[in-house]
Image (cartoon, rainbow, N blue to C red):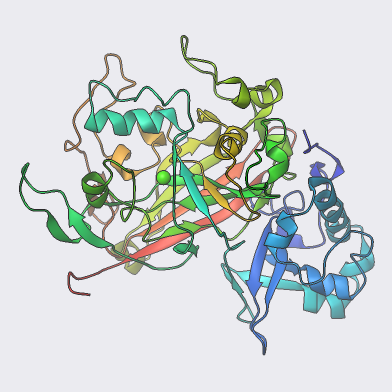
Length: 462
Ligand code: CA
């Protein structure tokens, strides 16, 4: 297990960046997630930073001033370069940053010239000087899994009430190859997709037009650290060495396009029009105090095959991360109303661990590369308010009720917004906001920031 709890997790540690000491901040000194900033300077340079409180600290500025000497920091490194480092080497950098930013260290705190260059105050995703938070890494490849058995059962129940889970589900982390080109940073506006939809009756012609059943999927994204050679595979014991950290992922989904196209080869245009990620990678190091056992499998469920089974992974392969989805319609924003929460779930409920996904992904010799993105699949719990998509949230069926209520897909109770508006799926102008955070007695709360996106209208001929 390469990720130990150490002095950087000490809950008593505070920072001279005052905003980091607010108990509700996602970014206390114990977190220090990676991000990439497009500077508003002459050459619009892209620089690597860590977030603390309301600030981003630019590492190259610290390096130029000699403050990262002996840490192995590579001047000019972007987050993909950091991904390639050995976890032990990454931790040397983390420890040095933790030291430099701690309340009692004067080196940076009392050097006002350097502090002005290296520590940038942000408001939302933009700094006071106009610097912008970009994607935290630019993935070359993106794979999306389907690792919540509750989500798979809910969705299966809508389309196959008598046989919701297919026989492979409990043996294989199901996934498909997504598209990296349409991964966008939080805050990017998303144009409503357009496309073919299922014929109204069997044998009829498909409809064509803007998506009518637009949805989000609340997921965690895992960023690959070191890759593996083509033809080699990553064992379950090694898998976590190959992960840099986690971010929030919104896998926007066009349900009507999906229903028509997904057989027999899986998702295509219903998914690849946009996927939004949060601006920070919360590192495996920072997440060390929030690990938990794999969710218990139901009695009679098969044990994973030996290549995906390992005691350590069973005991600590899970992550205790709370995930929330919020919505603000255009009308709500116009009337100055705050967003309302749609759901709240937890990542510890997943059937497969990230390590199992990495191992399974490479078992055939497929190579993963530094910075690749793996989506977990929609995170849904068994209660209605923990369902991670509108497809599930407004659906009146419940396969986990006693006796199960398996209503085919069309019977839905809309969500009521404070303006009196109702939603079964996403309307134009809606903003979807995802948040995630970890809390555990005896440790400092850390968070992932936000993953936001507003849907823009689209007419059939545009
Ligand atoms: Ca998905």
